[in-house]
Amino acid sequence: MTFNSENILEIEQIPSVYESNNKNLRFVSKDLINGVKIVHNDTDYVVGNLALSEGISPHKNINSSPEELDYKILLKTGLLLSFHKIGNPITLTTGFPFSTFQLYKDQAREMLVGAHILEFDTATFSNGGKKKIVAEVDSAFVMPEAVSCALALRKQGTAKGNFFVISLGYGTFEAILSTEGGLVQRSSVSTFGLRYAIKLLEAELSKTYYLDLKNEHQLDTAFRNSFIFLNRKRVDLTEIKGKVLRQYYEDIVSPALRKAFDDNDFAKSNIMYLAGGGAMYPELNECFQKEFEGIVEVKIPEDAVYLAAKGYCFNSLMSNGGDKGRAMGLDIGNSSTIICTFKVEC
Image 1 (cartoon, one colour):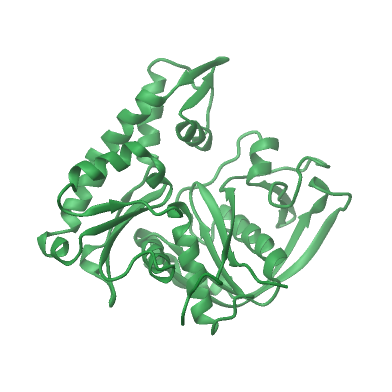
Image 2 (cartoon, helix red, strand yellow):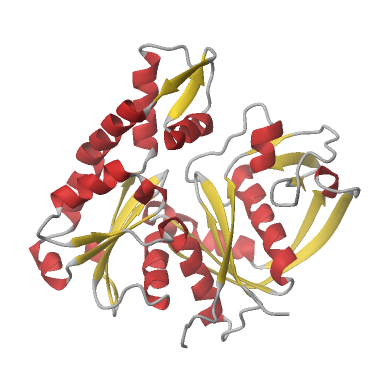
């Protein structure tokens, strides 16, 4: 199957947070993606951006199982947003880190296939009220996140031959050596993600400031923005952010890579691609550049944050015989949930 410029991928992204909310919210957002209020087991939940604007303490568990509430709510949200783009039936691919893939893959696949009744409130962005739709997933696939990143790199023509993939996620850091024949299983590694650095940041701030019950997502947002408001004062986090990111690399990333990759692996490839939200931090990029100077070329694709979701979508397309109008990729991440579909001309 050939993938060319006509296969345009569309991305929608929301923060992976939710909170129960029984308030009558009317015209509080401009559209569906910013105004998701979904019903699960007779309880209303605000999700994503709406949870951040209307919630008190929106949250999500880390590396949730398919049976947990937050996974189910974010799954329903992803299906809702994709349904309004591609309709039924849906070919869906999603994934998990290596650390939980074997544990959850069968459970997730069984949950995904079938009819999903989605009840949501349109009053958040329109004159309407609650509506119900049925999203029909006729086939579903589950794959490791890092493998999906490699698939996206290949299918988009960004990479070929042998190359390393480093996925820097919030909950999990992963690395693989990808070859044209598949991944080198021995080289795969899965360990602590950027959350480790966020916890270091929290510990440092707690020495000087009262954090006023800031939840994990609020700290993650402050970390990405490089500032936080504490006691009505703007606190610049640039210096401490660089410090904890370098510590995270030295404590977690570098030792894991030394254990995973040997000289034979580096003889097979001289290119390393960084993916995931962590690829956007210059401080981490500098650490990679310094350690691997003269060994491999470290590259950051423009779509580094979306590679897993794109790979999932490509897998759906390959699995359904090339029907772009049915293919969907869903990356339920610990920080963001990303929905990927193909742009279909009407």
